[in-house]
Image (cartoon, rainbow, N blue to C red; front, top):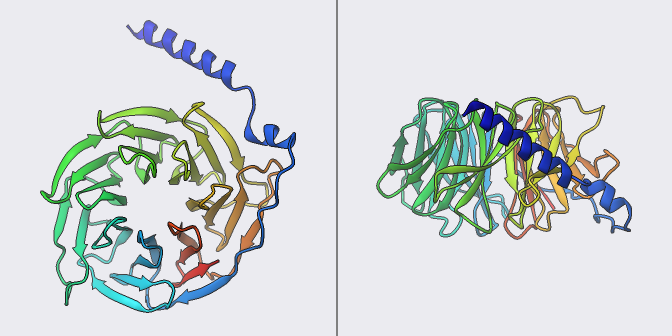
Length: 338
């Protein structure tokens, strides 16, 4: 059986190599491509946290966002007016991730070194207690993302992802093919049954919640993958890694399409996100910068460098309308660029 499996693997590899007849930059080099437009500028600064900002996530309305900091607070902001809508004190200040429920915007979730995913209901006079605490992971909670009001995906340092029923507070399905801490998950924007995860085993895996199985495994990175983000079309996804490169993988051809990085950038990437069209890939780096890459580019040079933070850019996200980018940093600030 082992030799049969090895034979099958080599057959699959050779078939994939045959089909890998070119990368995006080679194809684009033959065509004239429009320039990406004007560089975004910092339009708003959100001040209010007293500790390092570890995570942020936009609401579905593209105006509100949630941020999580090691000052032990979740803050709901209005990104347009910079007002704080609500501040939620957390039982554990060691928070690593937060998420806004995209459709109704009535729930936020967070988690971290307490191994729990805590879900809070918004709009109540005084939110003191979590409405639900989802407990099943044996390691820290690295990332959580709502599919809808009733279900959420979490990833953990115990090398697994879990698909939860929020109403019952029960784990519906476990995904445990990774060989290292799972650092990030991203839900397919066109098909909520599919999500991608990035792990310290340096692979990204695509999963289907209907079967509970891994449908694709993408090797290529040389170190931990810290962040994954689906392409707006749902047919590809981007990754950011400690090997100081970002990569673009396509599900249809089961291959790496492009790689972003150069010899001058030697630090790790904490977070990645795409513009609404998918033309631009935003990446937050340990060197206090956010670099913007052209997904069609073949030169290895970034399009823009968004400077302004005074410490590591720990998180970033583009809102649903594609009009604003928010970056969060260990300097305690969140900045909105447009």
